[in-house]
Length: 145
Image 1 (cartoon, rainbow, N blue to C red):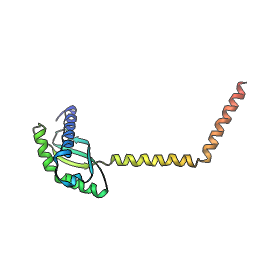
Image 2 (tube, rainbow, N blue to C red):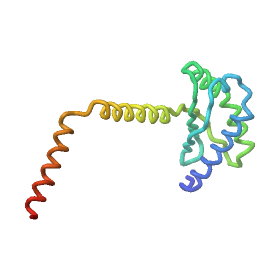
Image 3 (tube, helix red, strand yellow):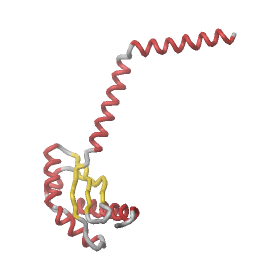
Image 4 (tube, helix red, strand yellow):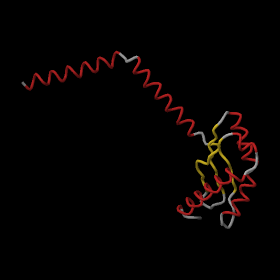
């Protein structure tokens, strides 16, 4: 069992090497259908398995096509990792689509829309709350004098 530090170093190394392969090594046209970036790599404690999380920008069809190309290139990626990274055993590679950036964008747009709606149509309760605060301040000022 490898230490946590070694596992994280191997994960970072795999992430860097796979990113380089995506730029210049993988010749499959399907991988170029959408813009692909490696967002994270999760390596098991025994260094035998690596989940490579990729974020794909493009249409839904391009995403499906790109994932199919990445799955087809799994053998090539593993073989290249074996040449580039010196480990006793090259880990099994699995590509997983990372949708966290899309979810984050969606949440931000929903929050912005709610904020805009509150500006455009303030609730009557909010106006009452502000009036009550003003009244409390004026009562406190009267008590001080």
